[in-house]
Length: 235
Length: 172
Image 1 (cartoon, chains in turn brown, red):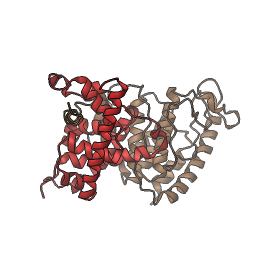
Image 2 (cartoon, helix red, strand yellow):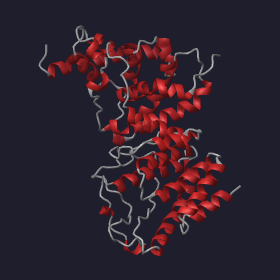
Image 3 (cartoon, chains in turn yellow, cyan):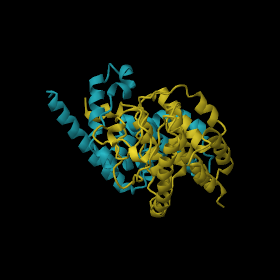
Image 4 (tube, chains in turn purple, blue):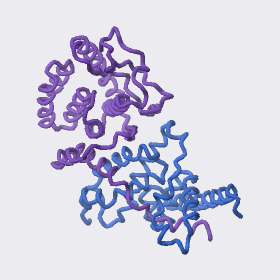
């Protein structure tokens, strides 16, 4: 038969995987702020953790990226300092501190989230008995590529890249994905901080306040709290 | 102007279409969820402007095409050749078994993945989905002549790819 005949017989592709559809739907509804968001996310039962969170920021609106990157950078410096101090203050409890890295630029390739060939350059305290202080940060290799923590971090890196590029809707989508994919996330505190700021950027101040209240209850001593409060009180 | 479709209904009915369009446009399996999500975010934003009299799928395809183009622009994705598993994208294979063998459909899918992206988009919309060339030109925001030119070149690329693949398999 002629090659083009087989092409015409292909059809549009059939049904997409139901679980993928459900996850996309949950993240989408959450980021769009619909009433169904909470229910959709809650009902997304134990999503597969095998999916590599390698979202790719696609929006090309880079005209304001420079200014946003500067603003983001300032916040990130604060975040890094705060994370280190927070870790030092809470030595009795083994926890993970997310130390911010330079924001990924859309103009350079994003590292594959789980690629062993590209270990994350940022130091990060792990739950392996290392005190999460700035002075005793483990080497970058401390977070095994492909580990759940590495995947958590990769997803939040993408969210931060979106934040720096002025895409709060995408930030929110990534943070919702994080919430769905990692019900026992080690980086939940950082995720919530990102999500609250994204909600504010989207003009959803009421939701941001509600979530900030929950944040303060969950993390009463968080050094990310002042940054959140400051953002909430900004005009 | 006819009302735009409801977003929820659109997501429900068109998710699979977008999913496989992205797949055929070279988005790797592991990134499909993220890219599909971003496509629907953009679709949501533009939906109020959609003229319901227009065919929906070429319009949706344009979002998938733009997303796939941006995706490929990142060099980390260029090195990967997305080869679509034929068993997941040839639903008609069983039904058409007597007319077209599964092997031929697999070959078609593989050859399609070898066509350059701009041309593949036109080829998919016209040959696979059967849309008219003016519809395609409008959806992809390209002049009609350009659309025809891409279609001609796409067919050539596709047929060359089929010939090469057949030769590799020792056919013909």
